[in-house]
View 1 (tube, rainbow, N blue to C red):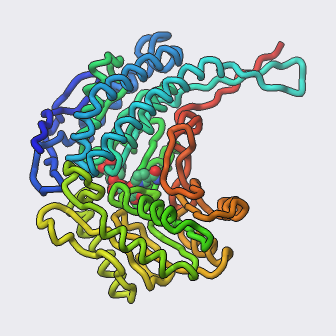
View 2 (view 1 turned 90 degrees about the vertical axis):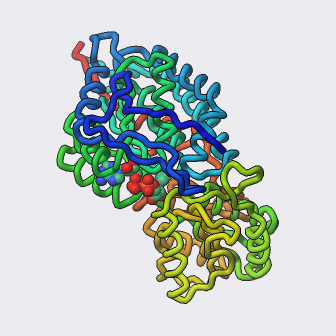
View 3 (view 1 turned 180 degrees about the horizontal axis):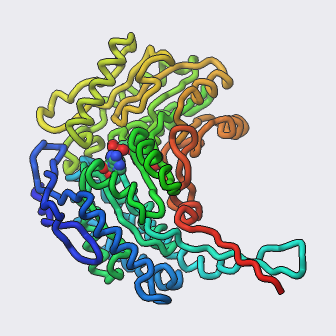
Length: 489
Ligand code: NAD
């Protein structure tokens, strides 16, 4: 499919601006390995200009700036962005699919979620006005106190490639709703739709400097942005290694951060389930977006009494998954995002084999595709808890399996990880589901499903999966500070 990539520049202070060092990064279609365009590569010099623009926009004209304008004023822009995204859905979905490798249908759904998320935070921005000056009850009548909720300032939003525009939106929409001004740094592996978001902001007349978008490498653009002294907060989604380096640099300035990091999420399938439904959710949880979801179901715990029949079903259905170019009708699995991710996934599978695990299904490049970063959906059994495949995040279409004999053992295995993002339980016993949901050490629990995500509900993890929450009202709080005003009467 021929897709036209616009020749975009950095978006700073409401204008397209060439990167100071004029560097560009090639855009590679992961389904064909062809270079289909390029994006600008920002460096510290561009970060300086963008932070300055965001700082001015935060307090450009006293009383009329983004930060002190009413929530209703900001909501108007968020709604206009949502409407434009909806208008441009088909074009944006195609760009997302060609840039990230996700099936076109999935990319189009993402665009609906993007528009929905901007709409949702427009509502919350409006609601914020009524929440100002909430009284605090004090024990002395001679004092009166109230609370103001104020935007934190200039925020850096650093995001990954698996849901390029959607995960950027999870941060941009609440940050802008709160009254912050922002610099978005999307992943160098998939930035195309974020640059189109810049175009949308220009089209709707978002005031200059409110949202600046810098594409570029993590080390050259992300690091100087995160450590910039005039950035008041860093909201990050990505790998643990990068998250920990951002935290280290933020610590020098006591700068607040929120961290949405990796996962190794379990699904427990009990013996009382409808096997077809359980298999559907397991495969959806594991192979949606090619397994490149932070909360992907990557560890299956299945009751020993149904394991053989359940695995037969999983293997049979896995073999029917259509793996193809994301634009082919019926595609359910596209390529992983890059050559690096392809090599990493196959290496994980090879290590699992060498450690004694069995590759029950998949494990290779699909035979019918000799170009592109395609990996077969893979199911691995005979796994022990000391194996790399059990402990580390693959971020590819790989499911590892263990059996259990009772509920306590299932919970212990589920929680046997440094991560704590998502966890799922499938059972027909509601009391058991409640018990297990409580026992999971994770930020998100799915009961009789896996992965559904709504912008109204909080998203985030515990343990090494991070802290802070995206989405819902919690996502807005990420960008607000609380000020008490106490008066002597
Ligand atoms: P990554 O850490 O390599 O990159 C994420 C972002 O950080 C990119 O924009 C990158 O350019 C930037 N970056 C890289 N080095 C940097 C540095 N030194 N300083 C500042 N910024 C830097 O992660 P990725 O490969 O893009 O994404 C995959 C990871 O993201 C997985 O671990 C996945 O679990 C995680 N993830 C988590 C969530 C969640 O909600 N918890 C969602 C999606 C992805």
